[in-house]
Image 1 (cartoon, rainbow, N blue to C red):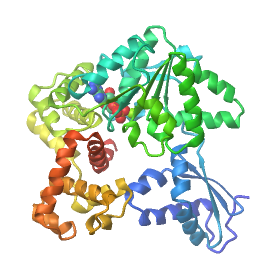
Image 2: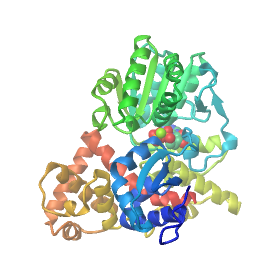
Image 3: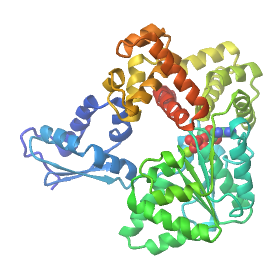
Image 4: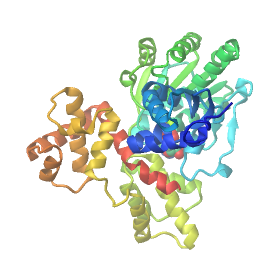
Length: 465
Ligand code: ADP
Ligand code: MG
């Protein structure tokens, strides 16, 4: 049944799939391969139909829409005959919320709170993510205060509350904090990442239990929906979400949504949902300023009963500027060294530790920067270096110039030469344009943050290994 061994190259289906992955790895940008293909599994192979498991429905849809042809051709070449490919969601991993994402997460210090208000359904809140452990100063002051108010009087004001901001800035933390606080006030709370919402919906359609699904989601006082960007482009999920939203909203139940960008920037978001989301309060979560980073570090130290000198904390807060998750990662590293060496960290040892966290060689290469920008905007790197004046190329190109200026030691002339022999004044203009937009335009700020984030990811991954 599962057998292609009678074909010329005597590969088992599994070997054929592994060879295919090997080939695709060579053909595709590393970021693309790692994000979408690395974790796929061969689920079945029958009569030339290969069933490939993806981690979640979002990955499945993406692979189906963007990779099917390429995967099919590559696999066919390897097995030496026509094949067909089917992508499915691999049944095993049901996405659990935040804890596994955390660098240095210690299950021992985080007993999940199962919320009983929802008949034992999948609402698991991380008891570490409370308002007490969240530093609500600087750019986070407004979202913090509003979240608190919402948890105290759900449904009474800002409804829905739409929180958006870059990766690792505390969106999930705030959703959990609202959930925990509202639960303590006796409210029925349901927290769900939007991918899980989709998976459950699809499961309930298959099992003909949509009635139960609806009852579950429409019977809560507080509905917390995380990472809503993942519903974009999924028609049946959006349809269901729209009705869930209306049912809850008209009954004055609280809805809180987290997203990595503002509603108007979510490509593929249903217009009706967009206008519903914008009908409440939309709040941006900003990266913490230096003072807030210091307070976050101090809070994390207290939580772990660690006294680290202010000078060391300052050094960490100066070095890790954008992402709170990375900030925590840096602190965890410093504490780990302390435990290993049984000596409190000094500024000097901390400097050495933090240096290790930067990407290899300290700084990204110009090629890597251009590649990341191109990947992010889904355009060819050559287009960034070329002469096109189209708006959808010009802005990414200027972002590349800005990042080349801020993330490398290259001179304006060198950057000009690299960017397709442009004059150094062009580079200067591009850099300043983006710098100014970063102050005034949230979209540009999010783009730049997200790309920076991706440039740093390999280092963070190494650090976790
Ligand atoms: P997001 O959902 O925005 O990607 P998370 O909520 O998962 O980010 O936050 C990442 C990590 O940073 C979590 O461990 C969270 O507790 C921590 N964190 C983020 N912002 C703050 C803050 N203002 N105060 C304390 N911890 C924070
Ligand atoms: Mg999150």
